[in-house]
Image (spheres, rainbow, N blue to C red):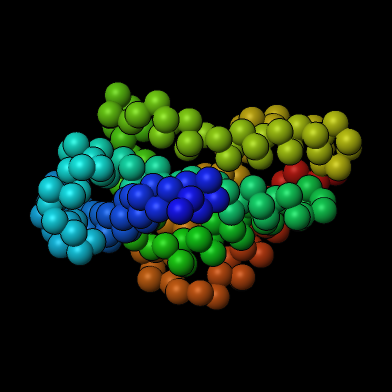
Length: 204
């Protein structure tokens, strides 16, 4: 019987695919891409190896799909939080805060996220067009918000593009430090510090 326009088989297929991607994130985060195996991913997901190959033709495909799944979930949550924030300052805070919270909840994702991010600089040809777009999408959203803030006189006339990517990179650096230090929860002080640094640099 259809569920929200989908058949039972389609719902089951999506659920199984999600389970495989969740298992892949755990295995890749623990062992890295080169040491991880499809067998271990299948075992962690509780499915047969052949089942994994029904959804993904290769280990690299699984890796990129797991990464893309996490990025899209982060983008969706960020968009929801930005929509709720009433002012530019609140939106920037929401941008930073959402990422710190998502990091605390999804450390497996961020381990492979930062690993793959290095390919942008070391081997950009390895990064798929879709992932490249996903990486830059949120910075572009932030850029549009900053441009509107400049237009309205909420902030000084900073260049929106470079400023957006600076905030994006500062946030990523903050999360990386928390990952290296094993920080868990209690990210409020980190968010406040970064927000204070950013806002003092762009306020009128």
